[in-house]
Amino acid sequence: MKKHYTEILKAHALFSTLKEEQVEEIGKQCTLLSYAKGHTLFMQEDPASLAYIVVSGWVKLFRHTVNGEEYIVDVLPAGYLFGENAIFHGDSYSCGAEIAEDATLLSIPLAALKQHIDHTPGFAQHMLSHASRQQTAQERNKEHLVIQSAPQRIGCFLLQLAPKEAKEPVTLHLPYDKLLLAARLGMQRETLSRGLTTLQDATDITIQGATVNIPNLGKLTKYCCTACTSNYPCEE
Amino acid sequence: MKKHYTEILKAHALFSTLKEEQVEEIGKQCTLLSYAKGHTLFMQEDPASLAYIVVSGWVKLFRHTVNGEEYIVDVLPAGYLFGENAIFHGDSYSCGAEIAEDATLLSIPLAALKQHIDHTPGFAQHMLSHASRQQTAQERNKEHLVIQSAPQRIGCFLLQLAPKEAKEPVTLHLPYDKLLLAARLGMQRETLSRGLTTLQDATDITIQGATVNIPNLGKLTKYCCTACTSNYPCEE
Image (cartoon, rainbow over all chains, first blue to last red; front, top):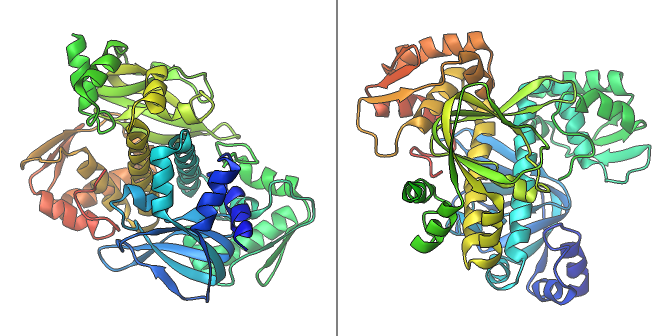
């Protein structure tokens, strides 16, 4: 079973270049956890001891304004790491995390990451590259709020969900909660509905419930990525 | 003169905790450069060998969409470091940089930074903390595009320019180019004009040309920071 943990770790860019025995060492300290939709993993400013990789399902990251309004930082699908930044945030989480769709997570002790940052040659550089990639992705998300239309932002989100070497037709699964998806994309529920219709007409994708079918990736990237400063496929 | 460079470096969080002799060593490899408004320092994807600290003036960071549209990544005042991320971007700049108002810059060889990341105990961790702070600031900028009003975003930008221990009344200098400022804040020129009027009425600040006077910081923070997930003063 623990061997499986090693595979999950190695599939993430942060751990992919560590030596086999180093990943195994971290894997031994990990735990596989299952949670039902709605479960709160942690709140903003909670003391932090674990980072997580999403193995399946969806996780919502959020913060609250001083006024008490909820702001959706991100909605993460399988393959994403979160909570690791607590190391640089006084060992407390910089945002809250809630299970958005039934999920399985691999928990990684922050102490294990710190140990490697301090003592494994090259690991701090890997963390730096990881932080840099995250920063680029975030910069792009901010950029899209300014220069992309709502249908283009939705299309971009779909492209980010598609596997790198995807073969057409590509089938994707969205979180069921459309209000959450709209908030993640920085738009109202109605804007998302209208945007999905426009996007379907323009790019031949079809959406049924939470399942998206993309028959022509080229058409979708042409529609979305011309209003972006990066080329598809994005590096991160 | 080179002693002065050490002071500029030490004023930045990234170098503030290095040993005196280490900062002096980096300072020896730095150069102070003056540029006139409009000068292009580098373009996106140019090979990178230098990072810069803004000593005075303003620097515009930008990217171009595939369609050829310009997107303003940021407009940086004195005290800000840029170009250092090229280390994690294949030694090329991830965005272009242009002098937005006559500026003096301290150039730092990327090789010197790499040397310290690889060989100075703790420096990679400092870079990680720096990257993490930048990420938090950027996340907040993205958040503000979604949850703050235009006048609140303008007020937040002013608060970020104010010195940490500022005494009232606080006087700030904006870049003269209002179109640039509007783009940095993700709004149209007219929205900026209307927003400035609303902000002046609501918070007693006065704006004459490029000079802003803030008589009451508390009133300004109350107006802006209630629609934010962080408390003033922000950590970064």
